[in-house]
Image 1 (cartoon, helix red, strand yellow):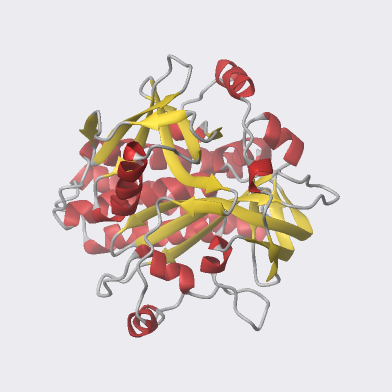
Image 2 (cartoon, one colour):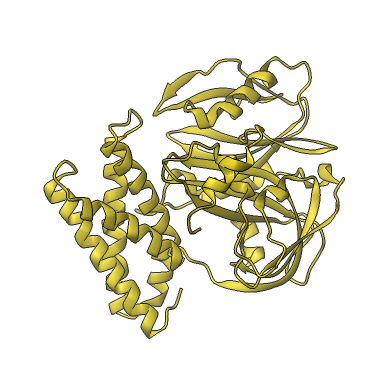
Length: 387
């Protein structure tokens, strides 16, 4: 990110106020922090997200989750998690302020983790998996893992893209998070695009969007470039897609090389070195019950055939993790298992899986998503706020 003068002043004001807010919280403690102080953290999160300060925005999102849990006396509250991300927020804010005042754009880009964007005039994609994150009464976030289905000038068939949509959740509306996928996006088209459409086993044509980073460099780093939709973007359904097996590729040796070459810095997190992995049909098994539970997550051992490696599927023990827990329970008892598509990261010397989908010739089954139908009346209530 290289902001112009006006944007630079806004970012400086944001990070200065944010660092001061964190210092106030640390000095007074959450029990005595004013409502205005806590509200300021939420406002800062929204501003950082709007300015596309990805690292700062994601850090503030977690801070806000824990602050809300604390104020509601939630059993999910984690003091260690709050301390880690408050400290990270302060470091980022002070470092970004110094980089901005010193016109150090290279350091600022590194701190903000905001890669350069490039136009994507037209790209055809299918959804291979969806990751879900929910903070009740605050927000729900869906990360669509996409695959390009036709070559373009800059993208090859089979190349991964990631598109994320985030919704504020009303505390007074009791809806499953998946209901928000039926809310329209603010795009250019008159016929509103709803993210739930991407769950269909067909391709979609996205026009006038943006992509982040260099696709070849991202592929070498094991990263998927991000797809960014805006008010100029148009999304239209394409043809039914039936070449799913062609998309199920993964190179474990390349993943190993990336791990060996990783040089983490003081702001890096375990989950930031992430791989998209695939286990072919009937080459893996999963335990029927978790090996251990911690921090409101259960770890289910997953064993690929003909290896001595054990991975652990990490599943929330909250209500929003119920669809994934039920799906893994069914798979543990099945005589045959379809191909498994998941995210893999490295946490506390464990190989942690986030199962996203099982995939057959008919298409993916999105494991984390509930399939319950939502009443139109309740959905109308959810529409009554500004997205």
